[in-house]
Structures are given as C-alpha cells and as structure tokens.
Length: 357
Image 1: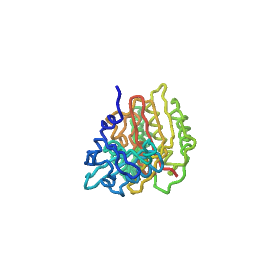
Image 2: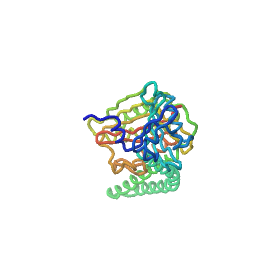
Image 3: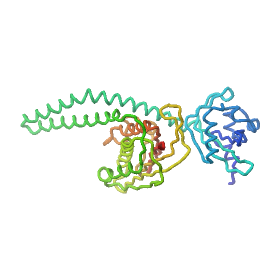
Image 4: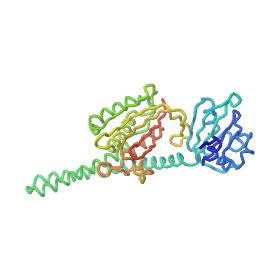
C-alpha cells in the first residue's frame, strides 16, 4: 500500500497549517479548514493574522521556531477572534524541510485536547496540594499534642498491667498512635517548603545523592541505571525540593517493580521547545531540562490515571498513603516546572520538565 503525504495530512483529526516566511497560509488540512472556518483554497495566501490576533502567543511561537530552526511547543494557547470563535489548544510548530524558495516556512499542529486536558488536571492537583499545606499545618498543631498524651497514657498503663494479653492491647494503642503521627508528619511536610528565589542546582548531584540513599535502603534489591547527559546546565530551583521530588519518585518506582529483576532508570535530557506560564504569571518560561524516572513495574491502573497526583490516591494499599505524588506536583509547580507520566504494563515513566538557571 502506497500512501501520499497529502492523504496522511488530510486524515489527521487535528488542525495542521503550513505558513510561509510572511506567515501567510500555504496549506491546511480539513481539520484546519474547520478551525479557521474557510476552505484551503480561500485560506491559501491569506495572512494567519486574519484569523488569529497578531499578539497571540501562537504568532510568537512561530517566530521562535523559525528563528531557532527547531521545533517549539506551547501549552494552553487561547485562540479567539470573531472569525474562528474561541479555542484552547496545545501548539507544536516546526520548521518545514524546504527548498530555497520555501525558506522560512513552518508547519503548525494544533491539538484541541490531549495535553491541554492534562494541564487542567495538573492545575487541580496543584490546588489540592496547596490546600494540603494549610490542612497539614492545622492538623499537626491540633492532633499531635493529644496523640502524645494518648501514647504516654498507654505507656503508663502498660507499667501497671501484669497480664500479657492486656499488655499487647496497650502496645497496640502505641503502635496505632505512632502510625497516625507518621501520617500527620507526612501531611505537615506540605507546609514546610516555602517558595524562594531559585538557585542554580546541579541535577546530577541531586540524583546521585538520591540513588545513594536508595541503593542503601529501600532500593537495595533493585537494579538502578543512570543515563545522564553530562552537558546539562544547572536547574533553576531549590535543592532540597528537588531531592524530595526525586526521592519520592524513585521510592515509588522501587515499590512498583517486581521483587526479582526490578529495574529503575534515571535519565536526563536537554530538549528545547516546551514553554509554560508558571503559577498563572502570564510570563512564558522555557522548560528545556527533562528528568525521566522509568521502572519495569506493572504500570499504573487506568482507573487512577487522572487522579494519580491527588492527595491520598495510591495503588499501593499496603505501604502507600497517597501523599508522595501530590507533594511532587506541588514542589514542581513551586519551581515553575511540570510533571507528567506515561504508563503501560511493564513500563511507567515519570517526566519532570524544569527551567534552566
């Protein structure tokens, strides 16, 4: 079977537009025709700014891709004009492989769904994490003191009890108090990381530190692999927060892998093109530093896919409290970064995208 590029382009369900060096439309697939409300014949030769305002982030993204001669992406772009209505999209722009007469042409791919929905979900996760900050501090203050009193009373009772079965009951009370205290401390940690001015952090020093901890404790039976890019520049972030993020993700991966031949790989890459607006600031920030943590576990259940970063959501009922990934989401957002994941049976990848210092 032989397929032409035109057939493939026309079959794509999302809008694809080609513009020349003057940002005039030169090609559009049927989905783009639907978006721009005109046929390809009518669109041909007309400025893209006839349909999208000149100050829209999509126009500046086109300039970025053209000037760098590299692909560029931007999440949550709002396209709005009387001609096309209102749309929220993820945009990917790449220089077109061209002949001399096509110099400066770029191809634009617009995804109305997908990553935009993912970012909406992450915003919900971030807000949940911030709510946990206040709740954690409040619970720690209100509950820790009574718990200490309960444990002290149980210890005093055990000194005056001679029956061994009754002693076991007081020991049970102490164990349950310790368990609740541990949970409160995990919640309290949400309020212990304050946003501050970002510092230059060597991400590989952070990862090597975390791997040393893992190899000598919870990951002693796991095979760890390092796939680092030694030329990676410094991250603009907070070292303690990055350690906490990496430690939580690595620990989750170690708990997910099989007991035999469990494998966790840490990779770093430099990838231009992703831009986001951290914390709703309106300022678009590049996120070129990527950290991937991959494990060969069974994968995350599909039912948890959209809520995996929510507090108290966990697939590990035996050992997990469901607070680790919520903390990861909050701390990553505090540094202006982004975290997402991909999962299938036998492979799960958590990906951090971080700003450069």
